[in-house]
Amino acid sequence: MKTIIGLEIHVELATDTKMFCSCKNEFGQAPNTVVCPVCLGHVGTLPRINKKAVEYAVKAGLAFDCDIRTNMKFDRKKYYYPDLTKGYQITQQDEPIATDGYLEVDSEDGVKKVRIERIHLEEDTGKSTHTDDGHTLLDYNRAGVPLIEIVSKPDMSSAEEARQFLENLRQRLKFIGVSDVKMEEGSLRCDVNINIKDDEGNRTGIAEIKNLNSFRAVVRAIEFEEKRQAKMLEEKEIGTKETRRWDDASQSTILMRKKDDENDYRFTVDSDLPRVVLEDEFIQNIKDNLPELPNAKRRRYKDEYALSDYDANVLSQSKEIADLFEQTLDSIHDPQLVANWIQTEVMRRLKEYEIDASEMKLSIENFAKLLKLVKDDKISNNVGKKVLRDIFDTNEDPEKLVEERGLIQISDTSFLDGLVKETLDENPQSIEDYKAGKDRALGFLMGQIMKKSKGKANPQQVNSILKEELDKR
Image 1 (tube, one colour):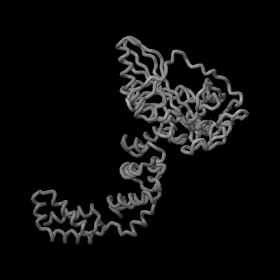
Image 2 (cartoon, helix red, strand yellow):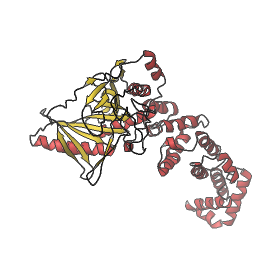
Image 3 (cartoon, one colour):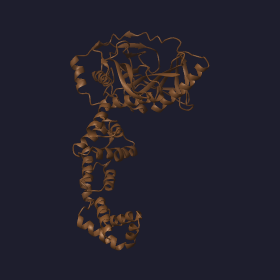
Image 4 (cartoon, one colour):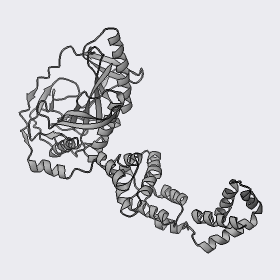
């Protein structure tokens, strides 16, 4: 049996204002406080196209290698729903702003190109909240927020491929700065279209699973549908097209409605909006200013800096992390050192604080200063880690902090030589143990020396001097 999967992804664009009015595009405001007569659909109001939203849609299309339409219209998609105040949604039906792109995922047969059929611009609807006592509360702050809908071809054949597609898509959209793509805030929402084909060519009816709000939910919904629809084929059932929803409590999809007939949205051209004509110069300017995309960065990091696949993947996962890596390299010409510190210490702090790299207070300048202190052996690796913990949320100057606390590492050979000899004179039994092949003796002696120096002795130098002195005794 073969699984056939296509995705429809709705992405809210990070513009300052809404798609067709001047209301602020802000998440988290008090209900129904970011609205106006235009986005509420009052009679006599006229929409006005947000140029920045058009620019962001073109940017997304170029990032997915799409063809950009230079002359297009907006349409009215008519349906009646409580959170759609006008009774229609402004969208693009047959003239989407971008078409025929692709995004790569890893499959069992190697790299697979998942085709992107179209990207079109539209406005979001309001939000319904259903209460426990049976009431429905409506918040229209989201009504009119600019959206792009990205529609893939049914080229995916597993939950893992769908997850990768979404991960790569989310990463790329965030990288180019057109959306914050936060699923928990609804700025990235996904519908899954899935059906199964058996070896004889029989196919189940397509199930559309609506408004999945996490990658985990997408994976589990696909896995559930694969089993449900495979069982249908085994029982010689095909079924009809239907809309379903994912239920976390039962870990299953639940039927919402059958789709025996196509919805009749009665599309018409929106006569209140002019056709949009994009000049070649406008598109070329966006293309010229498109940042280096994650897949290109990964290849460059491996070729230019000899980083592993894993390192290159981690460092290119967000623009902020990539900028931290590249700009720190301007001061610290040691790609592996910088990569290691970002992947361990910086990532650990981000996880601990539960923040995104874009919210990090530690500046690139101070991070570079800290690594220079470590690289120049002015402080030990362990001291550096402690200093990073202290400056991560204060962004203090690490050079000043290290000096004030007296943390500069001791590398004076004659001083360290004296410490080693003094420690050996005090621990003759450890010398005998070392000569008898007991490795722990060396660790004990190292600990005693570091204790005497209050942790400031250069451990590499101490280790070298200690071994040399032990060999003499």
